[in-house]
Length: 204
Image (cartoon, one colour):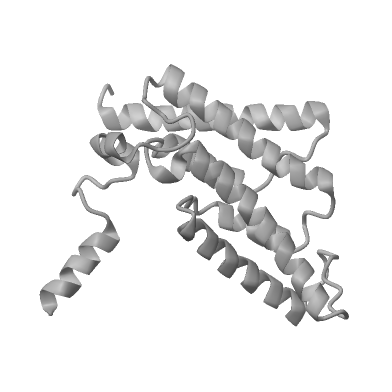
């Protein structure tokens, strides 16, 4: 029962449940739109692999912010190029909406990779925006505010309670490498893609 794996599982459960529970309580008491599906996978990454670059506050906050911008800009661009699109209404699904969704996914992928703030759950934020579910400024601020609150909770749980050198903003990759699985590094020491690349070059 005292194994490291059990402690990690327990920490993920307690931290994840508490963090999302607090956000849900705040949303309930203030009647603010703070609950969005991308928060779930973001919380899992923050507490399961807290020392990974994708779990750093910079990656989480920047990626979600840029994802929302990518989704909204894709909507506006399609409406500007195709005046008859009528895709602001989230209930409308047509070829214009398909174009906006595809464009938002492409944009956020390029932006996250080029700016080195890769956080996969943020792609869902771009999708939500491109599908027209962020219909007013309050919802946009609600999503970003919820992400910032989640990151603040991660700092408390990972750094203060967990005792990890969790970054305040940018991840220190030199430090992260010494944390193995907590940094998203498999027990083999190499990722799936690194193993695949090695096998490919070996065949050649």
